[in-house]
Length: 478
Image (tube, rainbow, N blue to C red; front, side):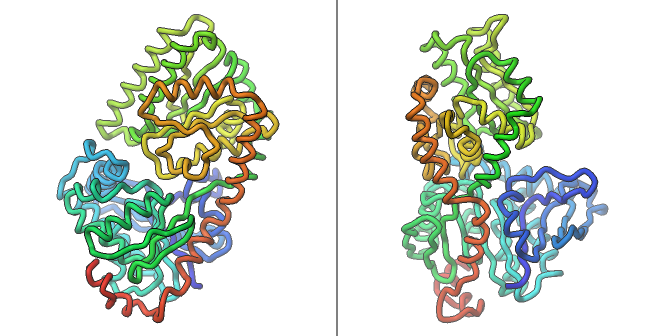
């Protein structure tokens, strides 16, 4: 195996002086990056005038980072436009929020072509390319057009809806079949994998068998699809949560909060179901007056995409709902809801998870949701809290010992909060043991290796890419 090329929208380069907090993708790929000679390529996060855009190569130990600036036009069309105002809502089942323009699609394709040009400058025949997420769907097609026969894999970190929704996206037939140019396309859940297989069958005419087990792959022409659920560094996070109990930060929080804590941690995004969650908590307070003054809902929600109007409107809505609950049920000694838009370190969050009697993870739709897994890993095994989990989070496929709820039904979620707070210790311990065992069985430290092993294994009588391009499936895809 040659070098591993990781391609993602953003690249976080470690600062040797200040360091940089590991993002979710960096945590997921840490083991892979440590054990292979790797190159990480993507957007620098910088927006420049067109004539000032640069591509820079930076070396940190055995890692090489290649980062490109974006122009204002590229940022508006590729990132803010098509990626986040078309693909993000549609892939989260929200056709009503998608705002499609042909200009944005052109910008999205243009930036993918630019990344392909930068990769072409340094890619060698034996290198493996692993592309991440919805920003870069057409990248393999752009690389194939430049003559690259390398193994190229793609992993979608967010959900993918059924073909009935996908086909409502203008130009879906121009974009989604480009995934057939990858050797392996990975998804978080069996349901996502099945949705994509149905799309291939109905729109491209490729008959597909759905993989029968998690982390399996099945042939679809020369391209394969598979299920590779993302995990966390379970034991490391558990140790972090234990250490965090001694932090001054957590001691101050616990001193200021009366009674039990119900915690939610989510980016500010309509897919997270924050408004419905607040409605559920309000129902819980209204129907369980004995808990008033004895429980506090702590919602940590860092802002994101504030330049998109829907997000600004959502911020106002959430602020209003939280204020209404506090004014309706609170008093001078107790605020039912503590809502903050400040981000916190993973260490601080680990301590808060461990201290919380209930973890409230109720997205309307989520690819996986690692907060659910972090909450479980953080618990005291002898006196654990209870995870309430949306059936529409990818994590629900694994964490079925949680209290599974429908986030669209605030009354049932509110009732689940009451049940979780009253759950006897013996049942809490039994549920925690089952959940923790699942996390250990799908630890993130082996996730990257599983994907790369599936990507690089032989798939048929010929390994030559030109043979794949002659297959009937590939011909239809093109």
